[in-house]
Amino acid sequence: MRSRQVLTTVALSFVLAAAAASSVGATPVVSKDAALPVGSNLNEEILDQPTERFGFEAAGGKRSYLFNLGDMLFSSAAIFGGKARDAGMSCNSCHQQGAGNAKLFVPGLSSRPGNFDTTGALFNAKADNGVFDPVTPPSLRGAKYLAPYGHDGRFASLRDFVRNVIVNEFAGPEPSGQVLDALETYIREIAFLPNPKLGPGGRLTREASDAARRGEVLFNKPFPHDPSMSCAGCHQADSAFIDHKVHDIGSGGWFKTKTLINARFNAPYFHDGRFDSFDEVVGYFDKHYDLGLAAQDRADLVAYLDAVGDAEQPYTRNTVQAEVDEIAAFVSVLDVAIPARDKEVIGLTVDSVGGEWRELGENFPGRTDTSVSGGLQERLQARAAVRDLVLSLRRVAMAVEGDDFDQAARIYADYKKQTVAAAASLKLAETWSLFNPVVHDAHFLALKQLADLAK
Image 1 (cartoon, rainbow, N blue to C red):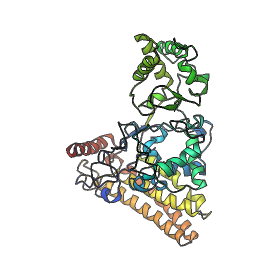
Image 2 (cartoon, rainbow, N blue to C red):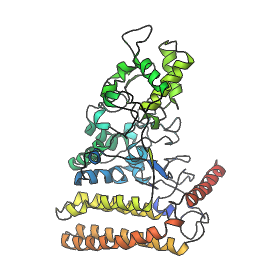
Image 3 (cartoon, one colour):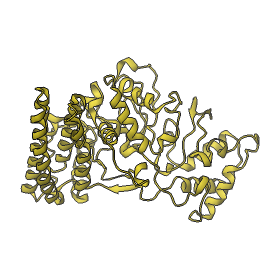
Image 4 (spheres, one colour):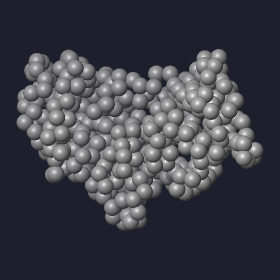
């Protein structure tokens, strides 16, 4: 789980004083000095986050070195370049917890919340095609089953898709083989969320409603004016509800069939996010293909899509412990990288994990944040503990830069001991942190009020 407080921000009297200097803070962006345009919103303040499940968990497996490295890189701005890196953006900014980001909005690149022009000039002038064509960042759940990749299916492999995002969309340096290996390993493990309404072969179970079962019949029924077509012809239930093809459905081009699994949580819909609900989607197909659906038919189809797109526990409350556990998994790659004298991974880890700690520390408001009262000493101790951990990691990097890997190993061993005390300080201050819904809401209400004043 991730809090991802990594957007550019503004120095405000009631916001953390360190925010302006570190480009860490809150959304929406209200400062003209920020790395992203005023009005940008990456939905970084969410407390109930999309639930993230992995394939190896269902099989009783464990996190591998490559998985942990990929998970860390997915959350790191270090692999991007230019504006994206300056803004602290990462893969997770658009694909939160592997899901989509319905509130993503960058003025000049978005036509509405939930879409983003990946070929605009803001992040990579070389990729600017002069056309405003925003698309929705897709959910990556079940990605290993969903080739081809990209809305228009231009990439046959997930690896090529990932490289394109890094190099062309966000102007990052050419990634090494191990960076691509790690990211691909991580993304392939992002699993669909369990859905008790779906059984073998994508058939509905008894958990589904009568309306949904009626919708299932309609979904498989041939279209009136073209019996060779049906909803199920493209969204094949026994194949993750896709056909691995692109189609022209009158929406402005040829786009690949999207999965319907867990799709209740993938709004907005269509490649450009033009529709907010399944009802709008069904209405479009009814009109475009002249299906002649009665009101009850449309309602039943929506019920079917709701059932297929459902999930158990779609959201999970974020906590200090969840953040600490995730950072521990990230930094564990140093257990391998330091003995292997792998400078690339050590550098990426120090940069990325240091950023993770700083972001976590920003969840504990400092003296100047008047949106929270009480627990000041605890909050300050938590922030100090985080600063010490970041400094220890920097000392690891300095030792590695001097080719003193034995010293790096000793500093890293001390760092691991520090984390125990730091975690205790963070948990002690949790009551007065942004992990407390009351404090969280008061903090971001103050920011929203400022944003409204800046309009």
